Length: 324
Image (cartoon, rainbow, N blue to C red; front, side, top):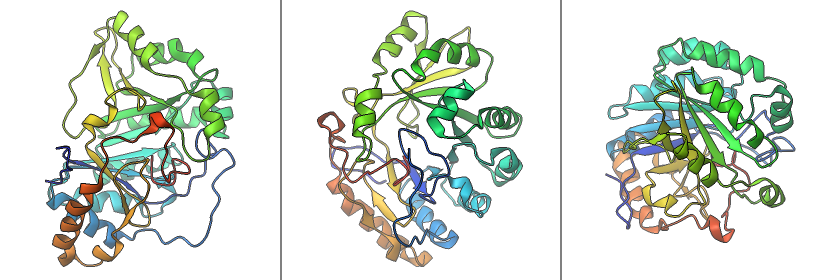
């Protein structure tokens, strides 16, 4: 089992398969994706070798991220490959919803277990302001289709922003009353490129947490391979609420995930100072012991916290760079 010097164990891998994104979300890529040099993203065989190595060291869950993973033409093949790796119990994907409707059957057939869709507003005009795209109704329709597939767990991610979508909290709550999904509010996080936006739009989830508890929402015990959200359920609601509050005290204490970028670098933290190149260790299946030995060694460098509270965002220029 991969473990750091603070006793945290890592069951969960977030794997970016591209850093390209076609949306222009104001908290991430407000000016759109800009290519800065040649890109050589991990191949299917490299991904299989990579995930197999992680699985041999105890990783049980893999989340496919981007950029926007649906921009990879071999996305469904990649998911099928990972699903068939011994030891991997859960394959998840995070998407902005682009092409989701046309991909659903393939994703289901490939064995996708969990689907996270980013929907930052239920107001079409606000959604377009945030993302740069007038696609809300299209994405909501695809989400409804997803609920009729064999994909077991569906979540919606909404980045909580002051004076933008914070006015929609009642609308969001009413929406999940009869929706069998989890709606997760994520605090805006400061990155290298968004300091001014962060200072203007950051809103702590603490007030929302108090409100939920006052209204009878109850916390759910996290699974060992769960993501960073604290989730709540309510007897009168079919849906659940999750809060991701990276600026809260002890947020990093339960860290259970590592990240690999689309070009094959391990990142011990989303806001770390550098990545560790492992591409040379995933060219052949027989390199698996070398990979796991390397991972165990670099985990000694993992810090106790991300230090976001001190305004330190590491090398993360924007969230698409490493996979959020």
